[in-house]
Image 1: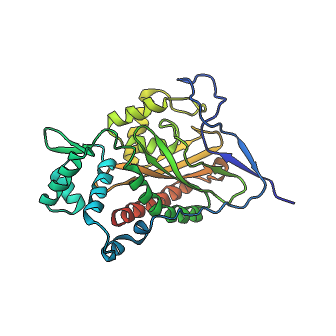
Image 2: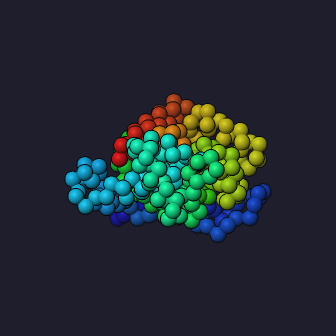
Image 3: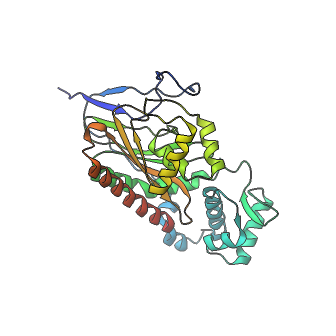
Amino acid sequence: MPIKSAIINATPFSSAFPKGSVLPMPKIKTAHLVKTETAQETPVREAKPKRLAKSGKDAQERDQYFSRSVGKALEVLEFLQAELTPMTMNEVAQRAQLSKTSAFRLLRTLETIGCVTVDGRGQYKLASGIHAVTPTQWLGKLLRVGMPHLQALSRELGETVSLAALFDNRVEVIAVVESSHVIRMSNVVGHILPPNASSLGKVITAFQPLEQREKLLRSFGIYLFTKYTITDQKDLNREFDTVRKQQFAIDREECAYDGVCFSVPIFSANGQVSAAISSSIPKTRVRDAEHEKEIIAAARATAEQLALDLQSA
């Protein structure tokens, strides 16, 4: 006879909110207690990357048909997408490991075809309308490099582990490795996270420039999910300050009752944060403060190694 297992869905999008919600709720999926027929963990299969992405730089060098100039152009578009401020030609040359002459020719070409723009100070950024194209390059690499790390962290902690990324106006879950426990916190790929309540939303939002942070808050809104949710703007600013100082965020039943989530940022080479990792745990399995420190330390070590692997991928 199959074993009944209860999953606490960590998705905070409940249609039945406590009184006092700050803004009207958009149409999004409902959080609920889900019953499944078995306690087995659904295996998470890593998506098969394209042959070139999988084989890496060595294969690029061996492939006589590989165009280095096209590869460098995509690389430049990729890190311009990840940056939140314009970059000078010298900065682009350094990041892409190009000579200044090659960097200028590449940027001039991208500018001519409308992929980048340059301001009066000679700083480059993605042109309007390119944002919807370039994230696929970065996200593909993030998922390819990140999935083995997520699976290892989930095995180490025995809990659900999620990976979220920053998009233009939202923070979204892009990968989940579920815990094999009968009772567990669950997450779903594609869920947009509240920047004021979820640990992933808070940790990514906290490290953005003020303009981007306000954009994320305006786009999602500030909602009251539980009695522990932070909705006051001053309190929220203090929370973001704390997150930046300690370099992790905790959601203590702020999205859903009986769940605790710990998140750490993934820093790029220049200190930007466009992604983060979390571990979600039923409140009853959090033993004490020392246990919390162990969870955060494990997540941080994973994020740091992932960041290093991304730089060399």
